[in-house]
Length: 230
Image (cartoon, rainbow, N blue to C red; front, side, top):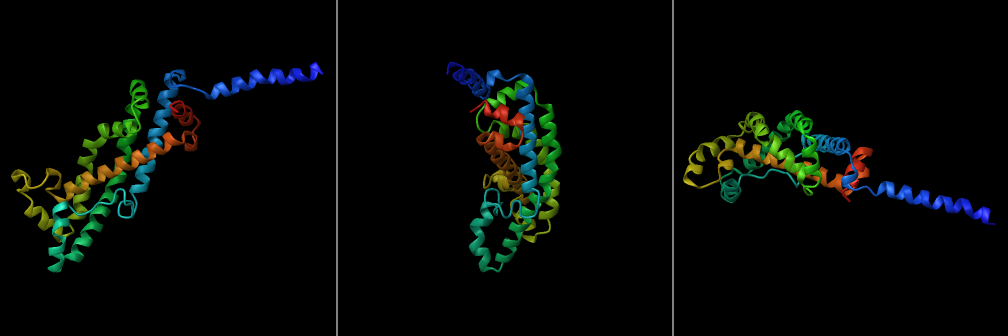
């Protein structure tokens, strides 16, 4: 009977070794793994976010990123509706969201460039930096450049609205007088900022999903790197 037990005893340490192979910590990962896994996650998350937003209804039909009227117009809505402007306001909301949907696809090249420029030090800092560190990285690397690219695309769409034109004329001096914030001085400036906020919101959603279920990303390297953070 001892000979029958021996294979079972031999299997025990092998099973323990197999279990320990999955019990990785961040310190066990090579620089190449950390950088490669994170770059794969960033590229995957950014592509998914752009794909979801840069289509008809990407903003308008998503309560998390849907762009409402600027606050002053929203506050004035009851009065404007009484003067027959209610439908124009509704149309402006649609146009603002369509403008954001048109602009967001332009973000993909800059987001990918940000990923390519990431150093190994950046990678390990991001991995240990908290649940939104990927999103924060993208915002720091791309926000200013994207704002410049988005603005003319957004303006081309919002200029079709008579309400937007009148709003811009009325608000031209408002920031200097401290009546409203600078980012709400023009409809196109307001929509551009909200489009950027929506983009980073969706990147954050993708980041949280990857962190919550690394293996579900479909990439062994992403699973290995983010799994080490569990």
